Length: 147
Image (cartoon, rainbow, N blue to C red; front, side, top):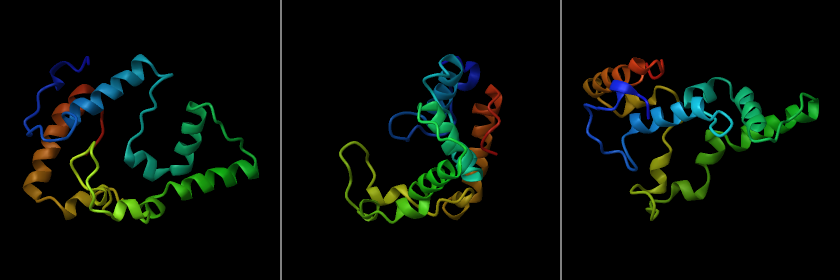
């Protein structure tokens, strides 16, 4: 993965499909290795400027949307259809059914969709612990994200 000292975590590795930090750093590195194959975007970036990132994602996928009024309407429609509000209202995400490929019910995928909402679910001590590991794992590798 090329992350140097970023491979060891002090948090338990309980995330399905592997350690979160290793997962993110591997995709971040692939963005540099093969930028034509990996579009790397954080939730915070998407929330901050959804229209910009939908446009950039369309370009990345070879589905660029022009700057015309009709193009802007398309971007607005995509942003609306992919919004937290629209997706969280879908019946499947209200289900307590557990899919075969993931150990959590569909309803676990949505909370409020707000940056910083973790403060409503985690104690200050755990947030501090996560922040320390984030600085170690991400900031230590030059990825200034998460805090």
